[in-house]
Image 1 (cartoon, rainbow over the protein chains, first blue to last red):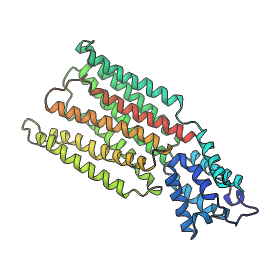
Image 2 (image 1 turned 180 degrees about the vertical axis):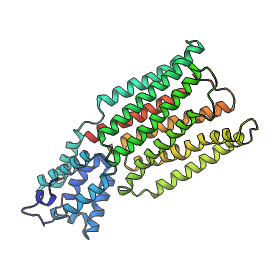
Image 3 (image 1 turned 90 degrees about the vertical axis):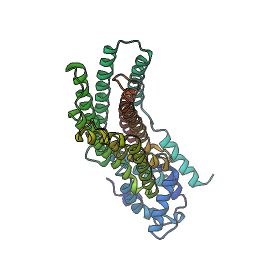
Image 4 (image 1 turned 45 degrees about the vertical axis):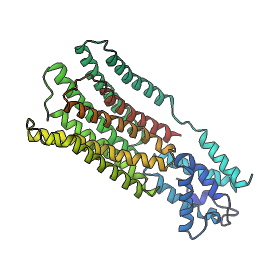
Length: 95
Length: 281
């Protein structure tokens, strides 16, 4: 498993990324509905004492940890890894 | 369109392009479901003599349930029995194996030994094993979503619904079983175990699973369990129909409600096949 922080680093690592919330919800929506996905991202942001629109790439590790924790009981390891990979790809595409 | 909207749209498109339900699942549903419906057509047309009908009914049920068990166990193995999802399907598959043995015992007494099926007997043990194992799989699957969803109202609703059904079944069937002087204590216990098993291990957890699926807006992760839920309800419906007809003394093997005992496992196995599709996408 690649280290998420290695994947997502570089310029703008700590800068607010306005599209991050929507990008993650977009990947997760077909699997768990947009509302559930949005609630997850918002809850993670709140646990980081941020609003969903204030998330930045530096928060990705926390998001990935939560996603893995949430998906592992209901999805195969392959799907969990694939979904996280999709999230990473989308976030990398947005930077 | 903003940059974030473009990124989100691209993500949705990428996931939407992934395969949804494979030809394998569709073929299974059409072939096994079609066989069950064909069986119903044979029964309702009255085209077969009674003895032949009994063979078709008993052997057909054994074969279809055995095939459903095989499909489910293969899916569990491919999902990985070391992961929670694979273990949930392993429990459902083990339940279907137990049901296969129950059907085989029933068929043996009716077709080979040509004597009434003993109650209570080995068939009942395997049948109750099905409720326990498959019910445990459904409960494990439904509660696995607790990290994703707030489920208190769904749990409460399914408990209230199950309790209501238990009361209805007790009044409509339980009292008659308990007060029947022709039944031994063991027969009364077994007679009550079926409706209680249906409600507590099948209908209750299935209701919870379907409510969870609804909360997920029937998204992909819910698809396999919707099939299982519908299958479990069809099976439980056949059970209740059987109990009502048997208490009225009008049930005979080959009755159209037997179709529910085939379609239920077929739908559960379809769920296992769809789980492979969803988790491969």
